Length: 238
Image (cartoon, rainbow, N blue to C red; front, side, top):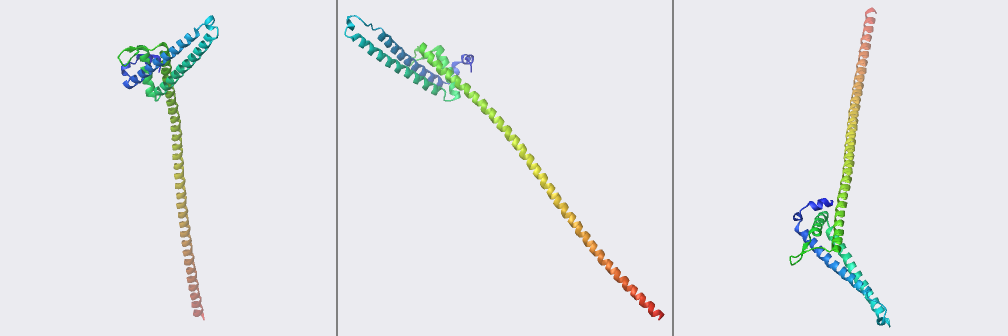
């Protein structure tokens, strides 16, 4: 999402819940910026304490300035820490989802440009510090959306590769199943051929045995006939 896209979308298209959240962040940013400004003024005031002269004869001014600078440093650190925490909390709220990040970035851009209404209906504008910090939240939201888009693309690419692998696996499995079917069919055909050949062999054996029996009968009958003929001849001539 680039700045052009943010600028060309009507703020009225942003859901109210995100506009309200962005307004609350802006209000807190202004309050935190005021605390930072106050702490800085306090530090400037402490630095302006002059040393020397009769007032500092016994080190009174030095002690006073040292204490003032210490207090100013504490206040400044507290204000900056509070601002940092607010920015981090705002980023977490804004980047809770890609949809939230998109809408919050748009709402923040609108507030940075046009300001926001306070509880009394008065239009408030962000201080320079507030704009800087709000823009940090907005940029974090845009970066989050870009990363989410990149993640989705990576996931889609990964899913595409997984689908391709699944397709290859499916095709290979189907091929293997087809080869196994062919092998089973060939084995069954070979078994049937073997049975058929065995049946033919058995039939040949049967026929051969029957022919042997017939031949034996024929030989026996011929022998009997020959014997009878011989006997007939002998009886005839004797």
